[in-house]
Length: 628
Image (cartoon, rainbow, N blue to C red; front, side):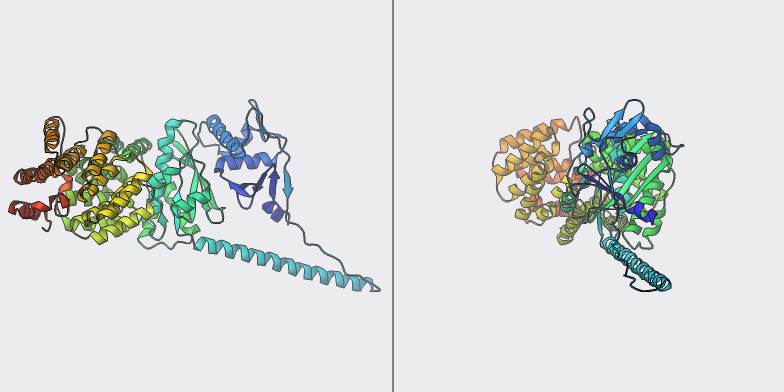
């Protein structure tokens, strides 16, 4: 019974309650966010109130002897986070006193409360004999034992029944940004990369809605309470924790929290070589699937169970590349290409690096950073190599789908690859976004809207997804719905230039030229020198009757094309605005040769409707494989 009491004890100090069985810290009844290492440190300090807990004791408790970390730096960071959680001042502490060069002392009185014993009263013996009294005592004791057993069993059943029901209803989860406990801000890319990798691994579980990495990163370095995060992301549970790396070792501490009850469900700490970090990600995903009672399909089991060692230096460079890839600027994409190539050079068998390289080349072609005819073949080669190494990589299938659509004009294969990517990772928001672009091009707008709706469910805070969600409405000529969605994106970030540009398109098609021009000017101010934006502005100026200024911008783009890549599709658009149909078709022919990425929307782009009567235009659509 003593062991039971120890496990059930709760420690109170000041305004706080340290709940051992619940694995949580409460302040006036409200849960305080506390990561695993600071939690364990607090537990050790509370076990020795008033006494000095040495740094060596803390090291023995928190780190194995064979774990190589910069102990002083990691411990100082964890103590700092613990003090922040307790709102304690290091110079004038109420709770944790630093004993220089030795350790720490917990200052506040600690009270231990155990489950109250049930009151008991013995029966009166009256004139009973000693033997009768013994019988009564034995009978009462037996009855009490039965009652206690039934009470404990009932409590155990109720608790486990409640836990089981709670776990069975968890169908959505978010991986919150893992804290960087290294004490070095330069290591943030590593913590962010591991967060993204865990998200990707969990996202393979089709019956679990997993919030995209980009949406979860909104909560990095914030103090937003867990219930608010859960409500904003519409999730049942979150995975949170911390990462520290030193040399070729890593320590990852994670815990699963039920958002509705704000209770701890599971926690684990992994001390591994960096080369084995992929095994950690796989193990976390499989364990969470078991914890929340998710039934894995026969296809998902080998996906989650598959992992291999990776060259530590290659993995570190790969994470740096993902950091730049997520920023999505032209310069960052070029830097990502270089980093992924370096990672491949160090570990040619690391399939995700090949897939990420394919992604980078594909986006460079789409963002106008390089001629698509040059970079898309590179994307195809990298994606194909990634799939040779691992056929289950959803991002490689998505990249191959993009190349099939934008370069090969192989519409059948493109759809097959998009569907395979989504089958492997139903929570892959970018794949659904790109598949939506495919569906728009082939006149399946309703299906495109459905895919974007699903993308928004798993990536609600993504600026690019919220912006792209308006594109199917634009191509379907539902301009009011498109404008509404673009405004929604700008409410998230008023300086997101793609949303301004697409809003300008929709306003222009409604004949609101002054408003459209204002949006394009805003976009050009945010992203100066962007050739696509300059062309959009020139087209709208021409349509509004300001053809002289439109011609000036056309001349400016012609001069710019001698210095860097300018999409021929954009030049064709200006000629359409100026009413120069023959020149527009001629430039579209060039766009076809250079594989300008927007040309796949030629049949649905309303700004080119007036060219539909021209035979050369219809023949061009046929070569692309699009219906007129």
